[in-house]
Length: 460
Image 1 (cartoon, rainbow, N blue to C red):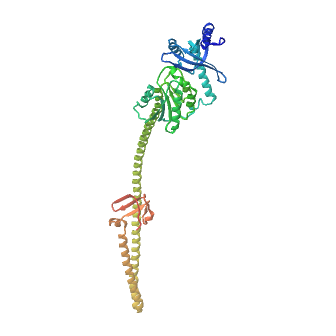
Image 2 (image 1 turned 30 degrees about the vertical axis):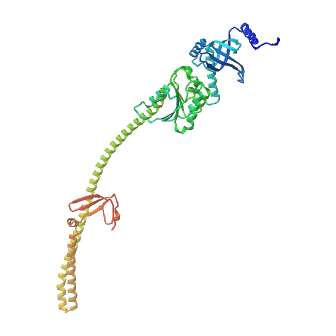
Image 3 (image 1 turned 90 degrees about the vertical axis):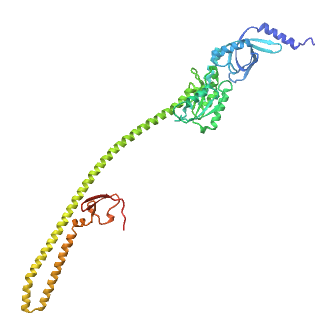
């Protein structure tokens, strides 16, 4: 071996000595856990790094280890205090002792952790995500959507085995009213580092058949607070905020509000509360319909009663008017008959008087005339007189016939023989075109009146 050179072991021994002499004390450092793995023996191996605040370029990197006798104590302490999982991707304030091993090289031995720093970092990151959503102008987008009046077609993002999913389905269907909900489950991992990507894939799947749904619900059962870290992811929040359907969240926590809750259309505490929120829409609508139906039935009943009373009144009024009209028509017909009878009697009387005068005149004139004719021997005049007497006798016969015919044509005699008189609006019907369907007619017979309504008319 060259006296000026060293073997690798010699050099690593020197380095180990330097570390032991000069770097054996504890250091508090801030770093981001890039990778974290736990061996079968319980030792935790970490990849720590530091990034430039402006460019996010890696400026330092180092391996670290937490031995099993320390790891589970530190992990439980961290997660209980912060409510967040001890996983990669978080920033930590840790106490380390630099150690150099001749075979395994440089490693930072983590002895302690300050969870309050991580709490502050988590809060800062949440604020940064919220501010970024505001800067992008998408934080309120889902809240601005119009909520369906009756969302019956529901897309569900959850794990099929989750208790929250079962609670949601049971609450939605466990009702004495049947609303006919249509649900479809889009399975997703609801906690852990793979959850954000899984939830986003489920949203994309819903979007591909978006016309089949009215609403999206994201639900999970209860669990430790650190299980909810995936709902403080920017990409998850951005996808929910920009989704074209209203999104309801029921993540199952009472105290904290995740960023996903903030951007959803409505945040509810539990899956059961989400189901109740949806059911309330249908119950209110059902109650409104039932109430409106009852009001309508009451209105119909009241209107029916009023119309029935009105109809009874109209029937009474119609009966009164018909009787009055019949009485009026009867009086008119009696007056008409009386005038006709009187007129015929007067005519007959006048004709009789004329005939009697003519007869007297003839009886007075004819003997005298005959004597004159006898004296004058005027044969031609005698012939004229005889002809006149014959004509007068014929006229007397005609007059008697006219008297008999008038007596036979007396309306009362005609009615007794089976004839009748029909009138409409106080006018005797002589032409079928003077009446029409729906008119009321009055028919007078020998022993009374008949009131009828015309259904149809026919021409001969």
